[in-house]
Image 1 (cartoon, one colour):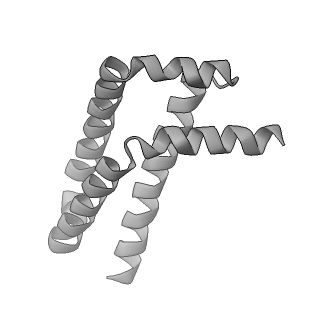
Image 2 (tube, rainbow, N blue to C red):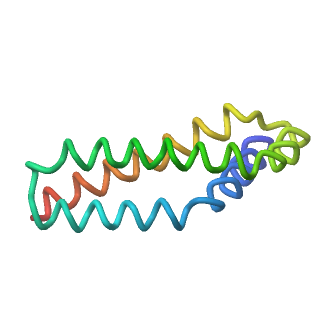
Length: 102
């Protein structure tokens, strides 16, 4: 029961920047489709840097929301580590799928 609660809280947190992340991932997938594997390192660092900018934005402008999650027993480190890991793993998975499809 507690694990399900934590997953719901993390997904609620991830929804706050999911649209931005999806747009960036789709743009990377389009560029990867167009230019092939030669552009992968650029896309990799672009995704890492946009995740860093997302972290900076949410950390500075939505820092009051952390109290909600902390009161429910989810730390800021857990929120960020799971959300960013999931987002980056999804990016890598989609790049691999596109590479094998092409």
